[in-house]
Image (cartoon, rainbow, N blue to C red; front, side):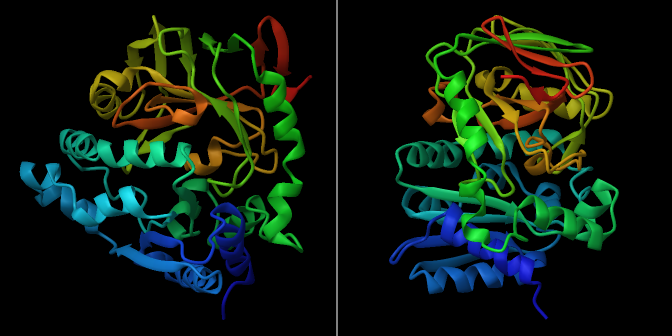
Length: 367
């Protein structure tokens, strides 16, 4: 028997987030673990008149790749991946893992090399998205692995996740649009400002945002959603930041991360766990040590860290900063094969000031 919440999530993704219409070539990417949600998304795409293409990988494919791939295989870009980046109208990605730690033993140098080789794919899709030529949506399928990382049973995690996606709403397709007023208001207030300062224990960092565009997020790309973001001026970031939650990238977890910025660059980086991998990623290319994104979470329905950035970066009362590539629509010009988000929790003793005005205190907006 199908979970009606998964069916509601599929409708949100296809009808609202990706807005699939007749004739759209829609690529659905996931793993075989997510088959129930993939199937419902596939059916919704057909109902919308779209032209669906499924791309499913098997459990264990990525660990095998990093164990066995030669340099030539790490550098190779599949023609199908190039075609998707250059020609698809819509891409719906459903993350699904049976083992959140399956890449914990992968060689970080191999991961960095493969990431660098795939940089043209990310850049092409970012540019096409900014130009309105490509629509995309990202979600996950609840699994035992995600539930375990969040410290929940699968049933509890499913309840938590589908509620965060507003899949329980009587009219789920319109739910995010109805929730958008506050994030739009905050985004409009931020527009035209010059500097953001974030402070909390272990953190005091200034980020220039003059001339940059703030983007409100209410379900059009990420599901669940709830944030607004921009790209800091590339050479403006100064100070130190301590990140509150573990961060996963390429299947590897780092925690206790601290960055020190000077002239916009990460000039010192440490981690209590996974420091070697962190440094390997920061050294991937010239842009990986600069910030490509500053985001402010607005989803107060997500209250606790889950070790999954799709959710954690949306937590109301947090900020997140991503090293690496910036989104062109925000005005950023930083280029990198990396885009890695880290979250700083401001709910206990944190503040956000914008051009000297306090905007948030202890995780709550005061404007």
